[in-house]
Image (tube, rainbow, N blue to C red):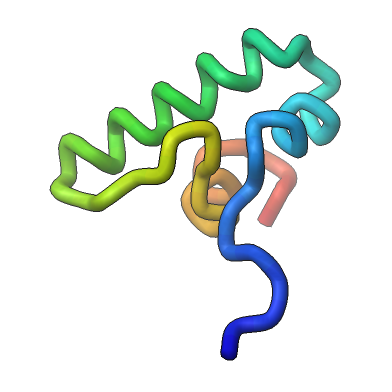
Length: 60
């Protein structure tokens, strides 16, 4: 069984980036839209940690 979550929630994105909850949801939606256009299944309000880290400098 996998320990821990593979995803960040919009609330976690909000805290990490120091932005509003609404802006965090917009970022999560934008990244999820990118993944969906590539044929991946996405979970609303959550973003895979690896994909998020690839798109924000300093997180990898």
